[in-house]
Image 1 (tube, rainbow, N blue to C red):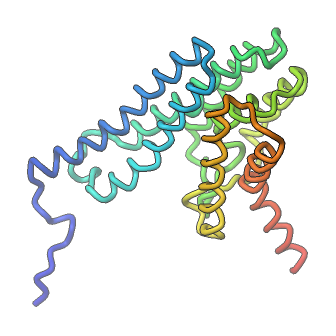
Image 2 (image 1 turned 45 degrees about the vertical axis):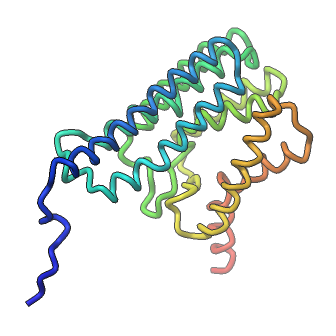
Length: 244
């Protein structure tokens, strides 16, 4: 007779429950990091703001695997990690970057507050959309990655009219029927995606250390990786259609 104990039948100890709840605390700390980012944004210390948003990204990357490993759903059933994650993600991915985009002075003055409202409203709707991910884990539409959009706004420093147009297009693309690569969960070419993500992280850290004062090769590399993340699915689908 098999004596192996199923994971769901392992008795929950107080230590296991404490460890599981600590994961929720880690996730919630992302909101505290967002506050630090906002304080830097209010002071117009933009590189520092993006640095704290980067810390929030790291927290967001590790809390999910920890939650699964420590069986948080079973051990802390009264606390919804999914809801907590969405709340923190909205603050770090949408709200703080929306403030930075609006207050940066890089948009047309009359359009800036309207586009800021458009960012937070469209971002809130996107986070509430149960169809935000396709069956293959691609995001549907522009995935409310306004921290990334703000980063490229500061990196490229385009004329205000072009920056304003770009932000307006991204708001509209939130509801467009196209797919954007999830850098971790999409299985296809994951090895390449992870390598590019690591390169992007190094280039981004260098850019922040230089307060966005970097040369054309760094800018080109960051833009090329962004183009891969946004356009790879469309290119692959088009290639498959040609072969068919």
